[in-house]
Amino acid sequence: MVGITLMNFTLINVAPGDPILIRIGLLKCENADCYNSAYNRAAIEMGLLDHDYYSIPWFTRYVEFLTKLTHLDFGKSWYYTVAGDGIPISKIIRDHAPYTVILNILSFVLSLVLSVAIGVISATRARSFWDRSLTVAMLLGYSMPLFWLAKLLMYSSFTLFNFTGVANKDAFIKPLLLNPVFYKYLILPTLALTLGHLVFMARLIRSQLLEILRQDYITTARAKGVNDRGIIYKHAFRNGLLPIVTIIGSSLPGLLGGSVMVESVFGWPGLGTYFLEAALFRDFPFLMAINTIFPFLFLVSRLLTDITYVFIDPRIKY
Image 1 (spheres, one colour):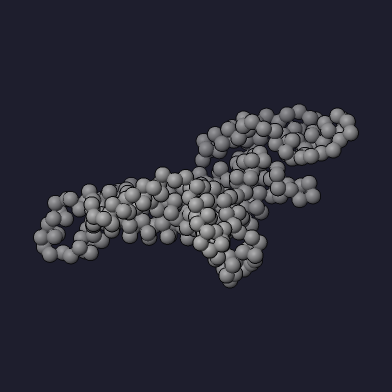
Image 2 (cartoon, one colour):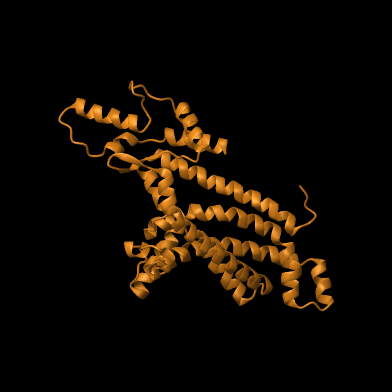
């Protein structure tokens, strides 16, 4: 995590663009002194200059970031402000993380269930019409960028139902779970994110099951009279779970990355939309916050994946 934060902090700070100019915006000044004064004042507020107007070294700012991070303090946003003062990033995350969490959990569960079903059907009916059709469909889906897939769903929905799926404020009247409009606007983003991730998992499950179904112990089970359901779910599926669990554990944080594009297409007010806006407007503290949270979730997911290996295969010991 220290290496990740150091790399992200360095890359973000050497990126082109002046965040101070974006902060002061279309400031009207009659002379250069007025402009310089506003520029320096904004730089001090953003922590880029000290009160003697000397530039604060990036490594000093990095150490300060790590110190605040130990207290779960991500600082204040440079772009999202109220009355000229930056909104605390922890408040932005607290207010908008539920939208991203709901979208990603629902998409993950749907993609997992559908990928298992599609993979099993394709493996048990190898080279059949259904297998070839599903293979072509999955390859087409895998080759499409996620934002393009979201645009296609939006266009198809508008053509068929006169509904673009772009969220409006009525969808987010709280309490969310009791608001029927919220579920209406949740459909297309969930569908786009689900379709974007199930194709790879379905292909993996299919190839893994096909390899296992050729093994000698599967032939022995068939000779003993075990039915197809028992062969798939009691013998083949469990023995093929290790690579499947590995991919699933890695794909969960990937859903968060993919939701950046899906949320921006449908105007979904989650962390993905705010992350994209922060990148466009050089909101470095917010970028650092998201680029710290997402890798942390990835590392936790990999740790849980390693622990899950023990329950799947008792021969694995740590």
